[in-house]
Length: 433
Image (cartoon, rainbow, N blue to C red; front, side):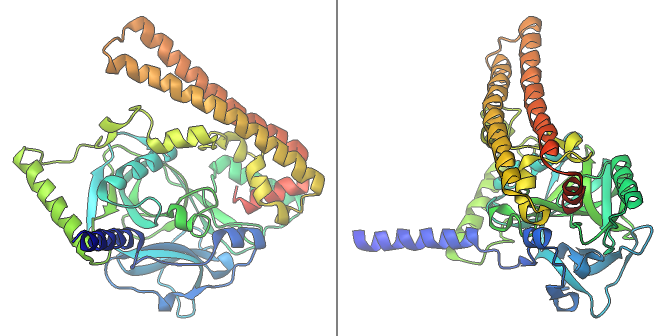
C-alpha cells in the first residue's frame, strides 16, 4: 500500500511539473541575441504559416528589419519602415519574420492599474500579479494592457543600414536625444535604422510578451524579459515600444488559469480547487479583486520580491537610462557586444574590471536601499511613525537610492573612456539607442 501511495505521489508531482512547464500554444521564432551580435536578419518563418485563429496575440519584426508585426486576436498587421506615420497594413503573401512570439489566449484575467506606473514599476506589477494567477515566471506568456499612457515612445524599424558619415551620425544622435528613445528590447542594430514616434496621453493597447527565464535573450533583449508593441484603438498605427508610463485606471490583462496548461488530472484538480476557493471568497463577501492583491504579504510593502532580488544582485533596474540613452555605454552591455564592437583584449579586461567593481558596489548599496525601506515600512507596521522619524526614514531611503543611481551612472562615464568614437557609435546602433 505504501509503495502504491509513493507511486501515486510521484505521478501527481510529474503531472504538476508538466502542467506548469508546458506552454502548448506559445510559439516563437528567431534569436534576438544572435541577431544583435551577428547582424543576421533573414526570415525565420513565413507569416502565412502562422496561426491566425481568434484568440492568437503576438509581436515581432519583419525579415531584414524592414518593419514591425503585431497580431490582434488572430489578425496579423505589419508596419513598414517606409511609412512616415507607422501605419499598419495586412502582410503580403511572402512576408516573413526574423523575430516572432505569439500565444493563443481565449480568456483573460483583468487587473486594474491602481496608480500611474513607470515602465519599471509596471514590469514589477506584472511579475507580482502573474504568480497569483498561477502563471509561472520561468515560462513565457502573452499579456495585454488597455488604457492610456502618460508617456509613450515607439519605433518602426526601416531596414535601412545607418550611414557612417558625420551628418547622418549627428542626425541620428539628435533624433534619439530629442525623442528620448529607449531601445528597450528594440530590434534595431547596425543593420537597420528606425522611425521614432512620440504619443503622450494616447489611448490604445499594448501587446506584450514576457520571456521568462526560458526565452530571455531569444524573444527579448538579453537581460530583459519584456517585449511590447503598441497599437492605437482604431488599429491604424503600431510599432515596437521603447518607453512608456501606464496611467491609473488602465487594465492589465493576463491569461486566465488553464490557458498555458494541458488538461491533466492535476490541472483539473487545481481548477477545481480554484473554483472552490472562489466560491468560498464569494460567501465571505469578497466579490472583487483589490488592485494591491498580494502586496499585503510582502516582506517590505514598497518592494516586490523581484525588486529585492535585483537590488541584492546589483542589477541596473533602468537607473542609468540618462546615460544609456544619451550616448554613454555601460560596461555590461559593452561586454555583451564584444565581438561586433571588435573590442581588444585590453578593452575587454578594463570593461570586465569596471563591471566587477560596479557590481560589487551596487550590491552593497542595494542592501542599504532594502534596509532603509525595511525601516520605513516598520515605522508604519509597528505604529511608531511620527513626523520626525518619518522625515529621517524617507531621507535615508532617498539618499541610499541616490547613491545607487549615481554609482550606476558613474560607471557609464568610465566606460565611454574605454571605447573609441566608432565603438560608441556602433554600441548605440546595436542597442537601438
